[in-house]
Length: 256
Image (cartoon, rainbow, N blue to C red; front, side, top):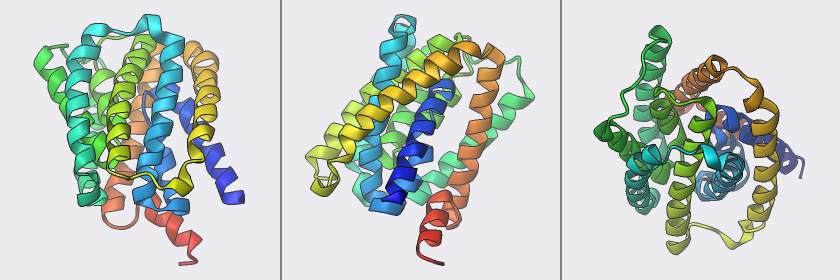
């Protein structure tokens, strides 16, 4: 019971942080829930939490959504999220994570080195980004970091960035959660987590948006995103070699 309570505390903190960075909910919570229910069970469950968190952020910032970016990035994301979720039960999470980690850490380093650079909001660039992040979200449950890397590099203001990423994440999460449910990826004994995630998502998002995001300068928000990108990348890369957060917490729990 103590482990479950500690996990919910982590989930609340992750939800609040994601309200500033635009991602990170799944990255912080999947390893800890995996220690309790196993990795394959944790990914679909956290997809519901991710969806609730995005929903509550979107409710608060709904007037700030950039609908052009939402369509160009979000529609491809939905399609590839379905494809990734279909392949979910047949792939190695760690192997995909290695490629994602290398890509993200190079992107973050480049962004730190060229702070004045912004990504052109061209349709083909946004479409490619949506395809990659949607597929990764459906496949291994961790597409938000790629989405954040693409969208934070545009000229959007911080509220528009969070609102737009939340809108894209929500439709992606609806797609993959539906697919997970149809193919039986949710175990009945874990259903009780879902209403708890609904409540935590509400309070975590409210604290993140109202108490943190609205008080931080634009530049600080971007730096937070890049720092989180580096941390996520390192965890992905270490995970491939059996040293990621999921493996570490599972090893500690098992007394290894």
